[in-house]
Image (cartoon, rainbow, N blue to C red):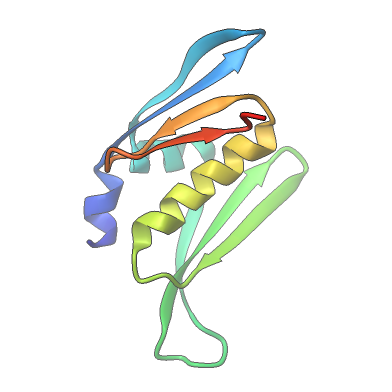
Amino acid sequence: MNKKEIEEKQITLYWWNLGTKRLDFKGTYKDFLLEKGIKITKIKFPKDKKINGLRFKYPLNTITFTIDCYDTDLIRGYDLIIKTYLTYLGDKAIFKNGYNNEYKINWY
């Protein structure tokens, strides 16, 4: 699957605020990336330039997450950046990706 196909898939994010489930985001991966200001660049693996990857730069408050993904399944990189965002927020959340997978974040 290529980057463009992934970015058009629909995702849904829910989080709990004071014990109440709220819809945080519903739309495509591309819309989520634009809304949160996440920048994606193509990169090469440092030791073997034949291996391609993506770098996700994600600004949050006073820090910036930088995640390099060299996985051949690009969807894992997209999901990882969203799960990192939800984990950083610290509230209980559910992430439903465009491939019928559901991730529960911060469910202790």
